[in-house]
Length: 639
Image 1 (cartoon, one colour):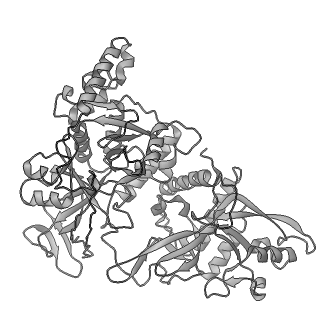
Image 2 (cartoon, rainbow, N blue to C red; image 1 turned 90 degrees about the horizontal axis):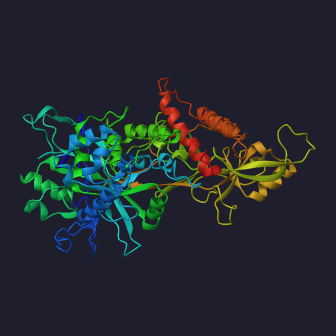
Image 3 (cartoon, rainbow, N blue to C red; image 1 turned 135 degrees about the horizontal axis):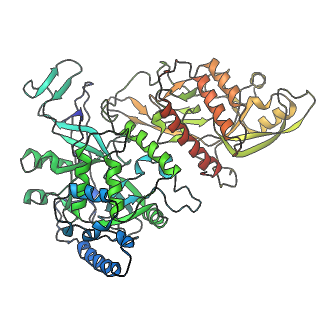
């Protein structure tokens, strides 16, 4: 059994998936979390789904060292005919002394335990294979796509990341390429406990009550790294844990598989057995939660576009990077060990990255993400899953037809999905399987032309009016580059007009007959033409957002909406609707005005008192992410 402990000084971690494990994490919330995973074995070697009793992979030698010697000899010959300053890109360890930045050599030598001639690293071009390292290039070639900002907008954890490839099969292009991020340490420690109750001899403090709090004197435990978004610490699914190590004892080799020479892969369950039996210590293992995966074609395209550098190296440099990551406290407000290791590896392959405005913004976004997702003041969500009678702070139960808005104090949690930053959402469906909603606060660059009247038009005037086609969500919504809406697109017409309600035009969304109604596009068009309503009363929305629900052991249901949104009162919903009615089709000239409307509508809807101590830097960073997302996804521009 494990209990959760916040790490004060990051140690070393590891993690692999769990094989039929039952773990109890003890926090002050006294919540037990059960793992029971059935892992399907593959015929071919797969570290993530490995048969650790299969010897088919044993005996395969890592031939990269031979290839490295060929690369080294070739570059030695080239070096003799080049000026010394151009030979700084040579990649044999013997030639690293020509690197102009002596600081990097000092960094390298401070973590090495072997002579330089026994270690090697080189840029492998586009040759991806298990054991390769992927180094993110923050300034890739820009051919008009979103390469420069993609990771800062949607996958911040990949910015300046180092990824170890575990699975990549050129002979089967249909299989996914899989890897784990090496340079994302957390301060989370999972600690062993022989029984559910605290032992006064082992712990400084032990409070035997409904909520047990235990702090152990010896903080040995399984220090966890963030390995990726899939089955990671913040995944909506149960996390999976993976371990890397360099043990070559018979006991360790029997339960492990080799990734590269000197780096082995095993389950956390087997790592625990080795540790408890005295064949290993906690620090012998590198524990990860989660992984990253790509379609092979997508990964190859990214490599060709310069998003990733593919690197071949030996186990020594990988282990040295681990030592750096575990040697310093997590001080994420300044240049830290994660960026340091990435910089060393980049320079060792001759890549001296010069910061630009775009990459500096991405650095700030990454630093904010690290503070939010790699530091744990309380146990993580996968431990704290618990049922509540209401998942909304104002105590209301969510109903179809409700308008909800993202919470003020938690809007940084939308960093991984910027479209929901300060969002206003209309709930269209809510059942045991899912919640469906349409966003109301984002206009797309598309417009709808109708005959109608505005509130200030003369009673007999009839003009062609233009409404923005609002972006309702990722499912079915038009984005930049689409030619328009198809018949199968989820296109909705809403009105908030008392006159149309009195005429029974459309039908209410949910049980509130005085709320927002839905109707057909033809009904809206006819009502505007006849002057029964004004353009401010209607909204045309394309696309929906879906939040799936998960049933807990006690039968209660949770979803990603829980704890992140407030239900807007009916009175405030009227004001929010009116404010959003001033939205126009999005273009490069009205971006700032649109953001002001979104901000104002969000401020109206959240009637609770906002903290005056909110960090302006946090709001600025999140606002910039949101702006870049809108520019790219709604306008097709990253400028």
